[in-house]
Length: 251
Length: 240
Image (cartoon, rainbow over all chains, first blue to last red; front, top):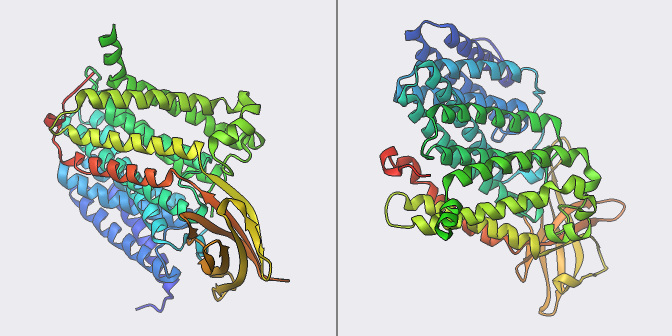
């Protein structure tokens, strides 16, 4: 067994996960589920080692959060493939996870000590559930794509709806946890910053999606388009706002 | 006519369009905030309506998105209220209306927070000198500051022991990050500290009466929302 440091093993597992997702994107159909499963296993190991190195949940900074986001997308793509039988979830999930990990290589990787204000359970719940929600919105996006690829199969719409509804619930709980944390940290559950406004835009957007779904006379393709657009809003809220603007979410 | 107005006010299409415009207005706000920081300065330092009447309205051309979003939220409130009252009956859709009730409570909480409450910032505490905090009806004095560092020297945790001199007597409380000290339900926050040349704690008193209502609204919202994924499409039905 090669003599590697903890960081060395982390890099091996991370590289293995990236290679696994890439292989899953290109593999023949019958190997795809296994390739995603193996890659997600390696990926979980890499995040675990990162957590051991940091001595906390690895959920601070773009590198760790994007890695966690990619893992959630990969795991949920397996769940939705198993439940709804469409390969779009598996193929799209592995492509998204590959792209996220490639993009992640550009982010700073050093582990910094956690600022005291982040040392609270409310922060961990807030961040972890936000990214689970983002991953569910990614699956909703794949459901929207699948609707058009599968010649407007109703099953794609059901999958898309379930993913977005669960995403909406997780996102709501994440916002509530964030509000409780902000109250204990800064004395208010709401701050007027661009990040908070974008977070509310995401919440309003998926509220709109859930209501538009039951408006009589609205075409199903409109709802599928909303699910696709919603993920673009999510990506901008996470990466665009985080990279371009300073806010209470800059640590 | 009245029936038509009621129908329009409770319609899902109104919900969808108000949400669409609201998203657009928030988008404009999120764009303008970092571009014109001077027009939004102090927005988080006091309740929103006090800030608006004092500073915000001076830059109406830039801050116009804010009253517009309040107006749209008022329409959404009316829409949610009328829809819920008209559709309220036992059945699967009841859960959706419980989420509406939670949402309305959260909006009410924001209204309370924006119109009441206060913030007293820049309270500098040192040892041996009590500082009067009129809003708290108490005087505060620093007793000591403790810092637990990481091996790198950065603070892992810190806290300040503060003496409260109140009409009820003298007692001390510990403040730290995410750990405000409460007196008569009003929280006192430790914002920053310095150890040299003499220990100094920078504190803030922030009273947000809408916070509890927001928490209750959030719990009600979740109670209504959690069963939704388990209801089938047929039970949910369609509406105008």
